[in-house]
Image 1 (cartoon, one colour):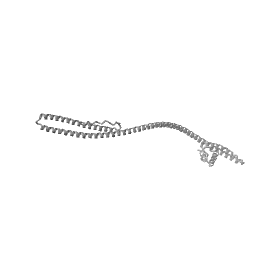
Image 2 (tube, rainbow, N blue to C red):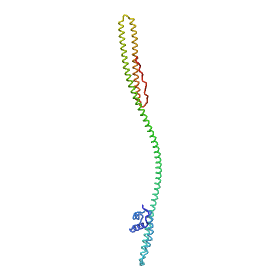
Image 3 (cartoon, helix red, strand yellow):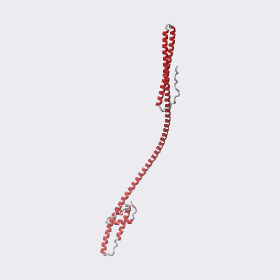
Image 4 (cartoon, rainbow, N blue to C red):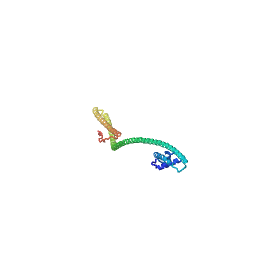
Length: 289
């Protein structure tokens, strides 16, 4: 709202309102001006009312007229001045009332402004405290982020280490599989050789038994000699059977060794993270007699 309206403009606006037959008030004068604060216009309007009486008193100085006309005109003029002063006093009272109301409104506005300022300061303090708490929280989060980054780097290093160990275990598994395949092949070859040997021993035993039987029949007349010969053949047969039993035990040991290696390979596959040293010791097959 504009302030500092010149007094001559306020006086001119009040004269215009009065010329229209209306009582000059603050709102009417401000409406006529189109600007001006109520306090400024009200103060200047008080001066206008004071000067209006002086202006009206000055107008009583009339040119020479007949005494009766002049007295009647002066009486009418004084009555008009008296009425104008009453109107001016009433307008002044209304103006003072409006100014008092305006002052009350300004005081209420100032009180509201003080309350708003206090609230603003409180809000500003709360905002500052919230900002400090946020900055503290941000610092904590940055520290936590740094710790998380360090943990991530450690986990990545552990992952690389585990991958390296996994590759070593896979290589170890491949080595074990190759060793197991070689042992299986060797065991199969030894089994075939043992079976061939056992068949040969059994064939020889059968031939010996057959020959002993034939000799027993042929030498029935020489019972004593044949009896000792038969005993010798029986001892040889028992020896051959013992050899056959030992051979079978050797074959069983080879099969047990192969099963043990298969069981170890199964355990290694079930636990890929465990590091095992490849076994360099191989079961030594029992030599055939």
